[in-house]
Amino acid sequence: KLLGSELEEGGDSAALASAFGEIITQIDAESPFRIKRLKLCSAVRDFGDVDVFEPPMFSPSERSKFIWYVELDGADPRFDEGTDSFGHEFMVRTEMFSTETGVPVVPPVENTVNHSASSRIRDLFLRNVFEIPPTLQYGWYTVKITVNERHSGSQSQMGLDLLWVPSL
Image (cartoon, rainbow, N blue to C red):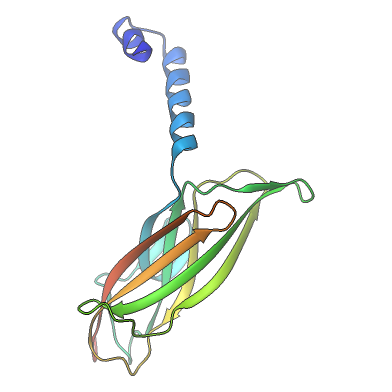
């Protein structure tokens, strides 16, 4: 309400910038941990700098694997005084199941990802290679990525559909 009054009265730009900064800080503090974006890629260079398979079609002879890429939002790092760094530890589970029936078609792949940085990072990305079994029947499948942030216990998951065809 105070911000609205200042805007009506033509408050100075420094006060406005300060007010917006406080709002952003409050929102960041309340932001839940989540997967903001999931993409199936041929290359991942950096945060947001990816080559996405569009459309998400794959085949055993021409395109049998992809890199899944997730952008995480609201991660809550722990500060380690010994290394003077902020650390994240994530448990990641990759699953693939039939889109039509929901039945898993490959065993889940689980791994632990550790990340450390000299400054606090709340938004970051994870990636890994996933190979589709060549014996899989052709059709629509869903790849689901689940990420658990170890120390907070927060979890998020997201899925994407792909089409497995004899040839592209």
